[in-house]
Structure formats: C-alpha cells, structure tokens
Length: 426
Image (tube, rainbow, N blue to C red):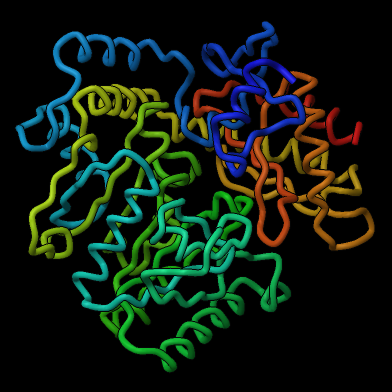
C-alpha cells in the first residue's frame, strides 16, 4: 500500500470507490494518454468517467482557463457574466428546445436535481417516472430516481418514483421481442402504470444508460413515450450528462434518436462540456424554467473560468467535427471489438454508439453476469497500459469504453488490441 493510498483510507469515506487493487495516482496527461506517479503511460479509454471529452491538456482550453483566471476567477450569478451568457446562447441554440433558457450548475447531479425541482414545481406533483437500470447522480433526490441498486444507498426519498421498462434492450421480459414489438410493449407498460397513479410530474431518462452499462432502447422509444406523456401533460427530461456533445456519433444529443415527436421539455448536461472543468446545467423552455416563484442564484455555477473553458471546448468540438470523428472512429472500434468478442466465450454482447461502447461479460456457456471477470479484465487492461471503466445493472459486469472524442484510428486499434490481450488473459 502506497503512502498516498494509506492517507486516502485514513481521511476519506470507506464508500468512496477506487479502481484497482493497487490504486494509481494520475499526475498528468496529454491527448489521449495519461501518466501515473510511477511514470507508467496509459491509453485513456475512460476520460475521467466521460469527462475529459476532447483531449487531455487541450491547448485551446488550458489557454482559455489561464487567460480568464488572470482576469477574474469568481463573481457569482449576482453579477453579469459575459462568458456565461455567451455559452448559454450557444447551448440554447444547439439544444433544439424552442425559447430555451439555460441554468448552469457545477455537476450532472446538481443539474438533474434542478430539473426535478423545475418539473415538480411546474406540475405541482412529486411523482416521477424513471427507467429501470438508470443512474442520475448522488444527491438525495437524484438517488431517489436511480433504478440501479448498486448506486442507491437509501430507500428514503423526497419523491415518489415509479420505474418504467425500456432502458435495457437485451435483458428483461421484453428482450426476445422485435424492436417494434419491444416499443409497443414498453408503451403499453407505461400506459398501464399511469392508470394506477396520480398526476406525474415528469419522466427522466438517459438516452443511453451510462452507469447501467451503455445500454439503450431501440430508436424511437422515447418518441412513442412522448405521445403518451403529452396526453397526460407529463414533462420529458432527457439526461444528457453522458450522451451529449456528439459522443454517440450519430447525433449531437442522445434524444435526437427519438426526435419524431419533438425535443424534450428539459435537457440536462455536464461532464464533457468542460473537458475536466466542473460544469453542469439545465436547458428548458421558458415556461418551465421560469416557473419558480422564489429567488435563486448559483454561487459557483456559471463561474467565469469554467464558462471560458466550456466556450473554448465547445468551439473545438464543433470546429473539428468531433461528432463525425466519434461516428467514424467509434464505428471502426465497435466492429473491431465485436470481432474480438466473437472469439471470447465470456463476451455476451458488444454494444454502443460512437465512442460510447459497452462489453458485457458473462460466465461462459451461460447468461449469468460475471462481475469478477469484469474486475479482472479491468486490472489486466491497466497492467497492459489501458484504462477503461466498468458498470452494469444487477451486477457490474460491463466494461465501459469512452475515449476522448479526438481518438485516432491508430489509437483505437491499439486500445482494441490491449483489451483483447486483457480479455484473453482472464
């Protein structure tokens, strides 16, 4: 045990998770690579949980942070803030939500917490629909709508939450149906659920479930849900904390795979927009955003420094078509991983979109999740110089792969080869 690890265990909570039997201290990074305190170099296929979205030490972002820090670091939302207004204008225009208003927070958890506040206040109801296997953050309200037992430490809740089928395509009672039948069954489940409850404030859903193991429904499910929700006046909150900014390749936002009946009423974002800086936020149409009848501010949300970083990072993403790169390089990577998985009995499924890929592991010859194998592959990958994540539903048996969006074809091939070695070693 290193001295830093010993100190960590002494002063930090036992429930604060660390990867690896011998946790590593990451000291610096560049591009798609990071280095630890022992000088080991790693290809980063997890980006600090999908947060270093563009690249480590991206010059455009570090320059913007440095220049803004030299002017002023903090002022709060009690004063006009030019970088905040400029970033809000860009995000509002990109969101697809008409007459959009933007509120900045410091994290995805806080963004979802704000979205729940808006929805329940607007609808005057504390009932929320959420998806099974979902994850929306670690606050008291966000935990209460998380449909993943491993990340839900309490059953106490300020909300009444009802869970809907549909977030997981290849497991559960509807797994054997065709896509069309799957959507039909999930809509019928939603209709039935609404027949047993009082007025509902909102449905919150991740277009691709992140912590849940990068699983998603067929395209169009949430559009079909929207028809039902609209009849009841229920709001749709799209949690884009992990799916936003072009990571899925096919779309800029995850909800756009379900766009037939229009955009969500509320959209939450965080992680990648700051490329490591602490930014979260909520976009909602004005009627919903302005429904609060009490004063509110944000001390740290919309900080001049984080907003400058967000502006520089978003500009880089758009100017360099990183969504297109996620589609092209991610498509090559997922096909390469599927080819590898076909030869490894422990791989049940390789799934995902763009540079958001999950590799689900099971005990060979069964459909039983194998979290121990996932842990061993995580360790073996690190030993060979590759950092990945893990997640999943009932059992944490999915390897999560989400490199920075500037990933090159050569780096994708290198990462696939390293992961193949880890899978075969285990």
